Figure 1: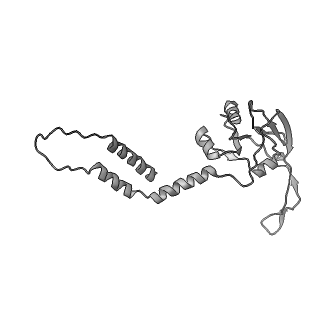
Figure 2 (figure 1 turned 135 degrees about the horizontal axis):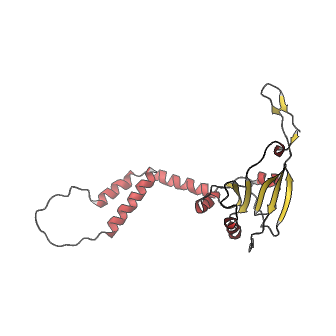
Length: 208
């Protein structure tokens, strides 16, 4: 924030120096030394005080964040037909779960469905943020302002989308795509008893 304030001040000073005009109107009255610093001198001093290495570093970090994509991202095709199907969330342990006392709480191979024991209160919407049709569909949908809606991106930058649309987004990485058996986007995911209901929606006009 300190660096940003310095930069804003520098821009203001530069604009002031560039837009000021001097006019010679002669000499009237007594002359006194100027107590304030010359604007150009103050500008040079303030520019010298800025840690430009840190400014460049922060810009580089911002660029990297905007270009970040989780490993295993899979670009999904656009939905061509409206379709709904159910996904069984039963999971089989690949390793033993220790009980903390030297024993095993749940052994490898144990299967369970988390939705048998809990209710998932959120609706998940997955879209491709690089598709204008899908973004337009989401903004017009009832999910856009839904407080219980989690938006995940199958492609595109979450940071750029968040800055443009005012939402904090995440990614539908390879694990999520496989676990929920996603085949196309937009997809709307919500609990249906002890299953997850997946609804693929056609974003009209989509060509990708």
